[in-house]
Length: 202
Image 1 (cartoon, rainbow, N blue to C red):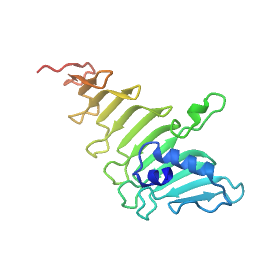
Image 2 (image 1 turned 135 degrees about the vertical axis):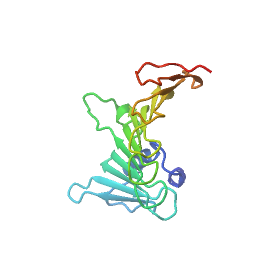
Image 3 (image 1 turned 180 degrees about the horizontal axis):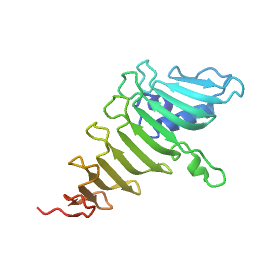
Image 4 (image 1 turned 90 degrees about the horizontal axis):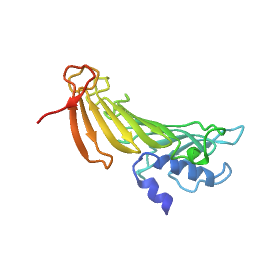
């Protein structure tokens, strides 16, 4: 029942990765597929799981592809608007047993970068960077001109700062500052492009 509920949801950060790992650990190359929504592929020589394909919303069309090294997720790709083209890419950290703890190696905390095509044109326009599965910063092209014009900074997973390029200069000219509790604090501006911001007066 729990697996079925997850499969009906649209892909969200980490949900598909956690599902892929938990499902792969419960299956083997000689077992019948437990659900029509998930299709595994195995290496012909080693028998290791290499890919999981599934239909996340139950509409009969495969829309999410998890590239695996056994039970470890390498990358997850998904088509979030159903047009047949991948528009979300989730990249996972390659574990180093000498440095990484077991917590770091689990599927959800191993995400290190998510790329999105927010205009659904095949081009990446938003990049999210994670540390041990916690969002740290985001770079985004909000108008589709190929240039980053929005930068988000997070502290402990909470939004701390949003920097904006409102004039197409390639660097921020406005910053929105947030308090640790997530509430908005102030706006800062740098109209000259000197890199020195000052509070915006009413």
